[in-house]
Image (cartoon, rainbow, N blue to C red; front, top):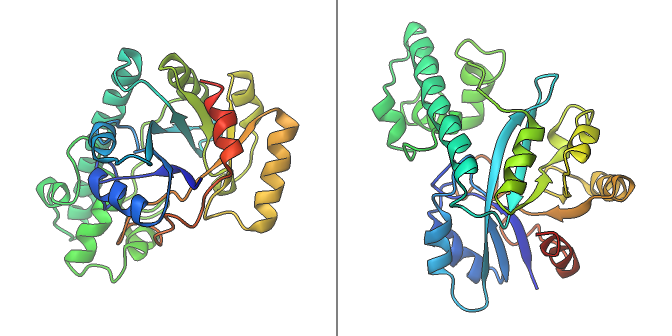
Length: 270
């Protein structure tokens, strides 16, 4: 088996449609993938309907939250029920806050002499889930920057002149929503966090898994997080965090997979 439990599509900030992601997964020999778009479940049905025999598509989500110290904390939900009312109500709030944030960022950019409209951004984004990555794509298209990374470094990243903080929920609330939706909550890419002070709080909130395998983790970090998962009684998980060509990272689909036993252990906690 070849299993990747962290992927994104055009329904959030990925560049492959759900159908294209499925085709790429098949070509790369994957047997199980999870669709974990940011704050939306819109891509799940299309991906599942496209999946041929031999490829399982797990319905998932990645909820953006914030630790008490303000750090970004992303919680993956695996095997969620996309129709869960409480989950969808919160996701709707998160998506609307993304639009409001985008409009504030664009106002700041206009004040800095960079005229970009919301329509410009929506050419790259689904209206449901707008991200700074989509704004960076417009800045690249208009020649304001030479790379999307430069857009974050000089314009829209934290501490930059057009940065606007995002509305986020508490990580424990994200865990609760995923459990209410019948899912398995997993803390995503712990190596990207400034610290893991939030981990005991998440364990108390019934966090199930820890993303051990991720492109941002080197070999030593992978071993460390595997041991940390054991210490806290969490199940290891992992994936490529694939965003597709032209996305925020290289295309790691098929390169970062997890053992079949990890999948079975996580599935048993549904």
